[in-house]
Amino acid sequence: MKQLVRVFATIFIVAFGLMFLAARLNMTEGYSGNNTLTIYNWGDYIDPDLIKQFEKETGIKVIYQTFDSNEAMMTKISQGGTTFDVAVPSEYMISKMKEEHLLIPIDHSKLPNLKYIDPRFMDLSFDPNNKYSIPYFWGTVGIAYNSSMLGGKKITNWNDLWDKDLRNQILLVDGAREVMGMGLNSLHYSLNDTNEAHLQEAKKKLASLTPNVKAIIGDEIKILLANREAAVGVVWSGEAAEMISENKELNYVIPKEGSNLWFDNMVIPKTAKNIDGAHQFINFMLDPKHAAQNAEYIGYSTPNKKALDYLPKNIANDKRFYPDPETTKKLEVYENLGKSMLAHYNELFLEFKMHRK
Amino acid sequence: MRAKRKLANVYLIVIFVILYAPIFYLMYYSFNSGGSMHDFKGFTLEWYKEVFHDTRLFIIVLNTLVIALLSAAISTILGVIGALAIQMLRKRQVKNSLLTLNNVLIVSPDVIIGASFLILFTIMGIKLGFISVLLSHIAFSVPIVVIMVLPKLQEMSPTLVDAARDLGANRWQVLSKVVLPFITPGIFAGFFMALTYSLDDFAVTFFVTGNGFSTLSVEIYSRARQGISLSINALSTLIFLFTIMLVVGYYFVNKKTGKSNGMGVRGR
Image 1: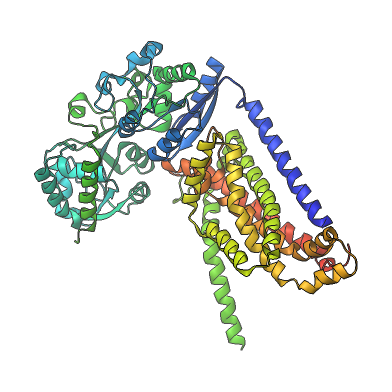
Image 2: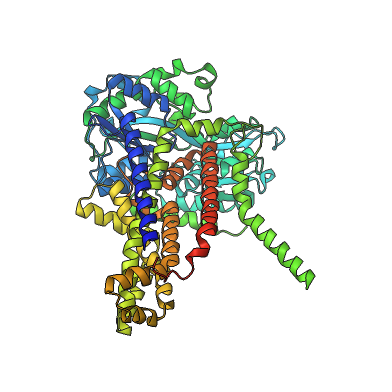
């Protein structure tokens, strides 16, 4: 008994000691004051220096929390019990959050830096007039390939993937919209097409691609391509940029037929407590210098037109990640097709996955 | 006979190598200056430096330890009381149904437990954060402690208690001088099980963290979107070494006091 009491007393003392230490650290870092701003962002998706700079300029302490998927973020916000002031969902999630009234309209008069955003990326179908969201990063879906493994061959469009020489060389990202979009685009249809005949045609076309497909996988594509396990991958541009920085043989191309344009956007969820601070933060991130610094750190494309002046020339002029208006005209954002249509897309994608070679 | 023994040893070694290889692989690459988990370019301590400079990560590690220690200790106390209560029940049926209810909690998927806690806390208006994580960890640890302690109680001969009563011990003395010392190994086993469950729990914690409060498993998972940085390897290495030190320390402490620990019935 004595021994038990002694052991448990020690455990409690140690635990409270550690708790005290954590609280002290929180205090010295300023996380427990009143003037705070809670930001909910993807893991490792901001330059930490910018947060420090923002804190110094405004005196607001930033509490930074991370999520790993749009769905997880939405669950947390819609359940309440949290006080997130700024969140960074992808575009398709914004229309969903709008439907469920989870967002607070953004006051554009408090964002003088909004004028630096490229008009190409404003007022898009998922959020007319940018009432609820401000673009944070953007990118495309395209083809990453290892030209030395293909004997110097170049890939420029989706239909190149059907080349017989690419047998068992292609890695596809495991997403219904991405793969179905690829099938539709290769037939020069819109990737938001809902015409049943077009969808069936796309499915048939995808089925004929199966001999070339090595695997349909998730994040591993990055490592596999960098390690020369396969020559071609259908990926998001941000991932492609990371792969290229690891393996210089790789190249990225936005297919000629058109492709998807995606956005991660800053929004103010209805759980926000510090709405003023949230606007200040969004405006801070829209400052061209800060946007450029962030883009250089993360490696994704910034929608901030003025920021390109502050980026190193070889990044800002890279047509693969900052395509010209000619190319972006052909890019489309995913529209919210409604539950039943999305289920149909998923079904067709599943049938493609089950297709025997 | 000898060949057989050799074979057994080889088998053991192979199994341990398989079990530990991933950990050592991870530790090896924490020293890689190349920045990725495949291509060892050169030796560096940069990742360790990064870990020590990241105060946010350090606070999260502290949070994780505090939650683990507190939840394990509290759930051990609750669990021991629960096990004693179940053991004292006379009716077989009631006992069995209580035990089944206890086991259902262990078997049911973490995701369901986590989701239901999230709903419960938001209905009750408890802000997500330290308290919500602590409460949920205590809740899923209690059944484990009960399961660990109960066999020890069943093992104890009822005559032991009768004898103590005969010799004039009151109820409290029976509990503190006879029963508790007898089941001490079970209590510690329960405590350590609860501790490890709490330390590595992801699913339940994932649902109930919020407002800047996070634990290590949730944080590492969120960072994985961009490919795991090698500073996570460095941190894992440090935690692994720390755990090894604890285990070795526990072993030596046990060895020193083990002999006098015997039956524990002599009124210490």
